[in-house]
Image 1 (cartoon, one colour):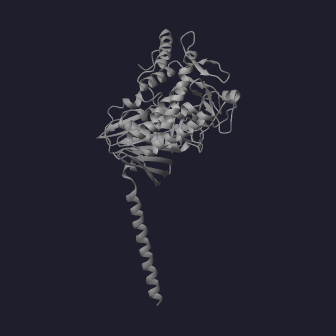
Image 2: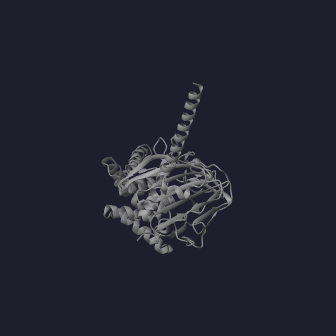
Length: 448
């Protein structure tokens, strides 16, 4: 009897061992093959809900690594966007690539993305950017004094090295050769690693000196996510896929009110209008919502177009509560805060972007609001033009116009809206005045 019990215990132990072994193999088999170049040492891969697109499911993963943590997106064509926070230097296994050494897109700037291509594959890798502190939030990101890591390729291995407590970097691997990556340069205001940071927590940008907190190596989560938006508007397939991942991360910063806040405080907005930290910036939010709309329509990603339509509802509420009436329309204020503030100004570039976005989104109520905003511009058009033909920057709560306009941004906004409308006499008059001023000043960067 005792022998039988011992035998049963033994058999039970064998079964448990075999089951555990089979489970372990099953987990290994389920490990996405596309992610294996990144998975060195101990790693745990957690599957998230996919993004549905016209081309199929885009798979999402959260990954815990012995060297840090990461997020990944695997696209139907087999491409991978990987975004990681590392706590130590490491190697990537790119043994399937050719033995070419690879190069930076901008060979004179080692912070620009590094491209290794060959054997029908390509890897685009952002050099690691070290942080002085391990953590980061929307308010502040402190770069290390010596922040620039290095990337070197030796045979089938890519070595990623940096000095600092941790570093942020991303990579885009694709089973096709990226022989022409001009789309990345065209979609980049400033190379990643200069004024821009892409992290698995979101898109960071150099903090203005009049924001609190700020500093020489300080960055903040920028609602507009400039480069992500430019990639979304590109016609390049791989640019759009990178934008899907970047915008997916950025969407997590929408608050319950319906916008992505600017987390630091602005000294001048706080002083002039009582607008505190966590404020709403209409231009930044409209720009990023437009990117979600454009990319969502292009790739038929309802998750993204829904972001844009929800934002349109929030903006409509903002314009209703925070605007100045003109003869036939309104001028929407540029900023507000959920906790309240004094009336703020209206800048022409913000209002133009809002009109174009609402016309693109397409609902009847969106169009109605867009034409009220357009009427606000038309009612006040001649007051925007200064004696030197430049445009005033803003309309202020006291009813005056003033401020220094951007060199060419507002002209580009006028151009885009005029083209969308198929021509508008009032917009053309503003464009002509601004163009005369730009020509006089030798400014040529505007759209043509």
